[in-house]
Image 1: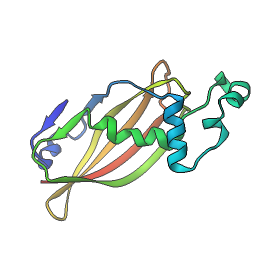
Image 2: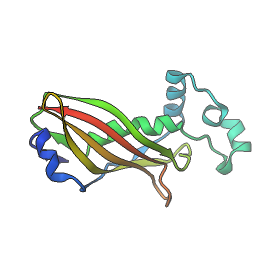
Image 3: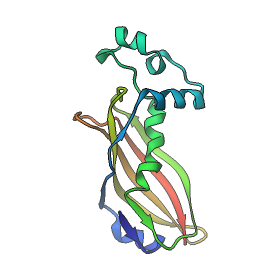
Amino acid sequence: MRVINSPQDMKNHIGEDFGTSEWVSIDQATINLFAEATGDHQWIHVDVERARNEMPGGKTIAHGFLTLSLVPRLSATLWRIEHRSRGINYGLNKVRFTAPVPEGSRVRLRQKLLAADEVKGDGVRLTFENTIEIDGYAQPALVAEGLSIVYP
């Protein structure tokens, strides 16, 4: 866990790889809960029997947005800013779902700080390259440029 003193101090870490999170397993129960939360019940995610017969690898796959939704959770294990009042999600510049995540896979986050720009109200807008890696696969599941704003 990297501990940064203040939002302003993030500027000293531009270009740095913040490392990788622990592996997280993506099981069918998690996929089903995400389907319930979002209403996305496409068979490739939730129909285990049909996936066994029709999907490459014979397994369901996680929703792309489920994979994306892991970024904040996993990022929180890589770094924190000690002296801050709040942080907000500011959005995404670019998201690519580059490979499916088969049920039963393990994934982890790799983060690199691309920018730390001052914004109104003494905040710092952070731009991270987020890569979700799949255990045993050369190609990542996701590459996303995410933005957040942190205030002192």
